[in-house]
Image (cartoon, rainbow, N blue to C red; front, top):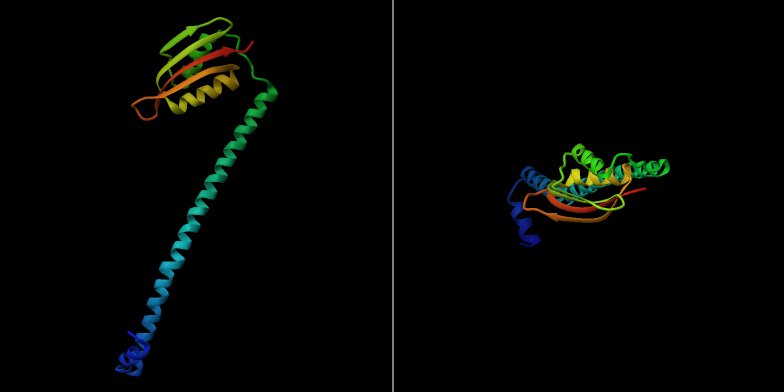
Length: 161
């Protein structure tokens, strides 16, 4: 439809109806402009704002963890006086984990196996055993299981002298 046909169609109506039609047409065009331009921009802005907040929170957690690690390094990781098997068993139970196999070795070394261990508590235990108890993880093998969030772990630990 060209402009002349549109003007002829519009001339069929009186002045009041023409104004009403043009006003409604303008309202529809403004609504479509808002719907197709401003709403997607606002949604993208909201997504970026949420991503920024999540990144800021992650940065805060990392800074706290870094400060804790630095504090532990400054204070020196205290090696426990109890034997390595008792220390491993105690810390595992404190984190809701259980050994399925334990093989002591020479020079304060031990091999430990955990079957169907929850991944989150396992990572917390590994952090605790290394940074708080002064036991070094010298070999680590993690294998997924058929159960979501569960892993089988085999590791070799060495007690610091």
